[in-house]
Length: 316
Image (cartoon, rainbow, N blue to C red; front, side, top):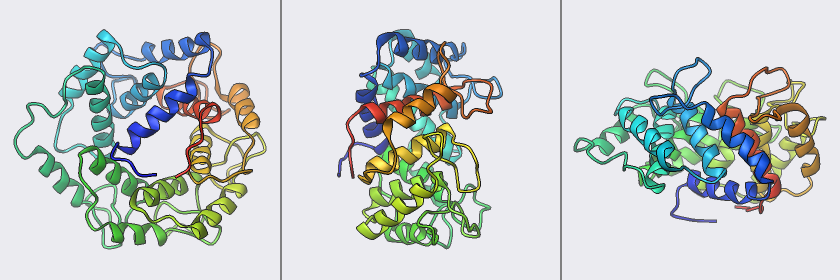
């Protein structure tokens, strides 16, 4: 599927359709939890307790699934986004800032790039390219010698949100191919031997974005995802981790659906895992059974997984 709409917005719209199927009380509890995490500066609380761009992005994505941003909430988030504008954000914070700003703008808030100094986008692009590595990928920082699958995916998302394309996409595609292992999955960095669910999801999404996915790879990924399918109903982070978690379950299920891999998981078992292990009846989701508290990031993953189960499957 091709579209000029950024990946994160397409995903947000898709998840919103799925969550429209759950009852209003359940939706309301999770919305109330997310809003309870907003701080006076307009940002949302991270694990350390202060406002954090990364967590704010997840809160905004969760609220978008649950009916969108409204009035004063949108205005306060917009103020926080404008206060965080910088050419020197890490790629993860940059993607968080760009997505949150775009979501606020679409809800009637300010354009995050309005009033930015001349050459802002070009400076951001130069900053991204400063992390490109000889292997064709992108590292976490300028000091990184090897590309990271996750950070390469983040860079591609950033370029897309900036309305630009990844330079030399064929090098990026080859970088991703080189991160595949014999089990069919993908690793985060080159020295790693054991594939992970989350690097595999990032690799697949990146290959789909760049036109590098084919049927042989699709079959390989199926084999890997069957290896990390957990007994509880969700997905494991890798084959050495003995329990399912919310992040891996969301990214694993998203990959299954995006590649049209039938029969890998049963939706009813995934939903049972969410309800019994991760969802708090008062609102919010935790990351795994060992976690004690809900947060906005894992609430997004929990809601996103529910949305994938209940909504239309959209294979790429």
